[in-house]
Image (tube, rainbow, N blue to C red; front, side, top):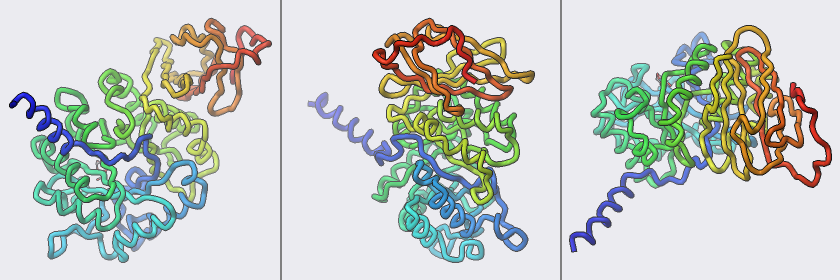
Length: 421
Ligand code: GLA
């Protein structure tokens, strides 16, 4: 009898634990304030750029009117420094009354009226990283209910001013509390980033059950050094990280900083390509009111977004790392297609990289076509051992979308060494 009862109990326990919100079956896309606008609360001297309802309404307008929403960028996310310095008399978090005079509920209504979703930020600890009121274990339930009552669609829960044992209790607790509100609220957990991002301190199986996405590593900032460091860390630890991702549960290498000041054009293309290969959340942190056409062009690349949003949700891997400074990354996609990113960490000049599908470990079917994701150039009739060459600029990337060719149409052989770019 006891043996029969036990599995039922275990099953119930795991149901209660899991974040069963059905959200984010593909990596989420949207906009997040932090990297670009930080904790700028000086609305007196900088009214357009301070953390205020105006900033989020502006970004919602741009997402809705400039073609972003249709491409999938649907979240408008608040980060730190939105709250008043004290909770209200009932102990609830409240928005800063000067910077958010209409309150978060009204902001959520505005964002929803544009067909978008609103995300908010809290911190499992005494204070947020910026020194605003945190969420202690006793306040987890209340805060989840407050966010739901405001109509919030996503929560980023940071981890400053607490310790590992508080986090071990608090993150699963918040997951349950969000579920219990009955409102689908996506859950972004900063937990692993505070524990070094790797087992045994980090349990990725558990994270996949309680969070929709999680920060694994250091904060991004507006520099190539930062982006490169992040890419290399994800490559180095891919055996642990890659299997953790899948529909509804994503590794988060942090925001896209394309459109800001720290990246060259090549580096911007690299960030976008690698984030798509990594099946990473695509949260831009930039100024959509002033972004250049060329930066928007990178962020709005349809084929790249299709790769990012592939329904299988399999994170890509670095499959080759040469002494020549070239890395090859590959993501397996649905319908026997795949994406490759040839990434150069060289600092000299464009590098001609010659390879073949055989060298990239692609076997069946026999004939493929490839499209360069950025230039649009296509290459037909790639057989197993056809050599082809990509030209990769310093700190840049060539990204190929590779799909099974239609053999019937292939009565023309490609040149032996077609140069793609
Ligand atoms: C931490 C997080 C950042 C940002 C800041 C806000 O550093 O990792 O993404 O949310 O806090 O203070």
